[in-house]
Image (cartoon, rainbow, N blue to C red):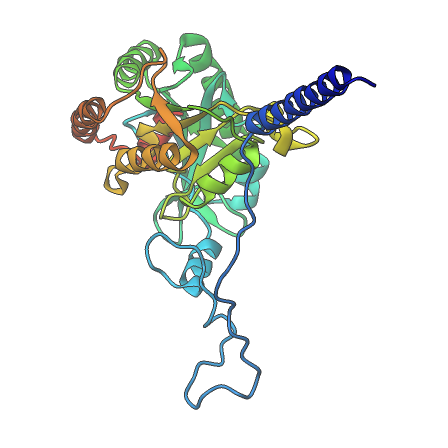
Length: 359
């Protein structure tokens, strides 16, 4: 083989090696960022039974740190979680209420048996409350309790719109059937007046229903679902019920989540999610559902900035424009005005009534 042929072969081999190396580098560069294993640099000390210092707690939960936003102990959080949540009662501000007069005391078992099969009138929640003989308070009927009066109600408006005449008529039929079953007599308010009240409430709710969202877009390398979940978990987010959704829990048990974080559901359900590339995730805040005192927008802003910094992303609006700090200041100022308006209407954000109305 001549020197020229050898030279050409060497050059060809180098070119081929360069092409292979470049292809490998490009493929690795285009792979989505993956979650990294979490390493605990300080292993927890194991304490053997009977070797504690004198006076030390023997409670096995004493050395356990539960996730918490308000500094409560794990035992306190557990006790709070085991406390049954009281069902929201009917309220004339957002409900049509029809009193049901009865001649004698009715048991909770009889009231439960008389309940309609569905607790809705059209798209509106339908409810029944009894006046407890023991406590003198209105409550959802319960077995072993006795009641001296009842009231039926239907919600005036929700995010499906205002109560209409057809829904009102369905409410009347359900309430009348319940009253007949317990031997009571209902008193219904005038339909046209209640429908008009429903329209006015719906107009107010529609004009003050704020649902904010920020989109985080990858600047260079895409993200895997695990990478997004890992970074969000460091900020307190936990997995939601729906694949591809995470939530930031509220500090108080039973309240709506403060924030939501969502990405492609199909990517979250892929056979190998770590090979799935995400270029966008959405951070959201349902303003009327979260208490003002929890400062949800401040948390939303902090979370967006932290995630964008950690994952090399940009915060953009629906039009793809980068959202700057000045724009966030304006949004925060407008939210304060919205909170004031809701407070004046006795529909404070995060309250039971607001959560029912804006649902």
